[in-house]
Length: 323
Image (cartoon, rainbow, N blue to C red):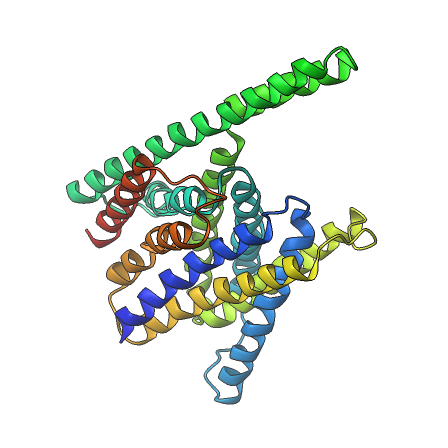
């Protein structure tokens, strides 16, 4: 039953990225506005689940140090992790973002080796190499798409340059540099690092407050408060430009994301192995790939090379976690 929950977790995370991709399809959404809707939906689900746990008497008392680390985890993962993910999906699509975000496993391994003095087996190291190989392929493939898109933009800019030389030339140059830097890839990798850092903070916090559910509720609520402050300071509440369709996709994405986290915790509570549970959760790119082929075929280019790299990332992550 625990492993089934882990598979549900992977499905939920995969569905979340597809929903975010569909919400950003029109290209009008502001990230802080989208994240506000996403976090509100997730907080409502966590509030309901935490209330049920509180009524059943299964929540531990709150400790100051545990609260501090859960707050840090909330700023790292639900806030910065989702911000980077949303932005990456806008640039490179759901499948590539989900696959690159599995680098969380690699970052977690490196952080554990450096700060927690964990050892690394030969097979886990081999898995890291395989995962990095898949990541490199996705980076190259995404970069080629970005450069092709920017080439078209520069050609358009060159055609209109006679009308506004300075503005068009600077815009074309900027877009060219952005393409070479491959912003979407950097954002997706940044999301992986943010989620890994949040996981380390959460692992420390659980030693003080032994409740992953309570910790997730605290962290996600902190992320919502900080993001709403940023949205208010940026004036995005006054200039609200999300349609009902976009709000629906972002809200459903928040429910799916939070459900994935809860399914993962329930898998652990069911007595499943942590390693195998995490490995099953990291198969989420396969679900995203399948749904992309099924739903997003017209808006996201899926090539054989990308499919192969997704499998490499999943296999590498599975080897790191399991061995």
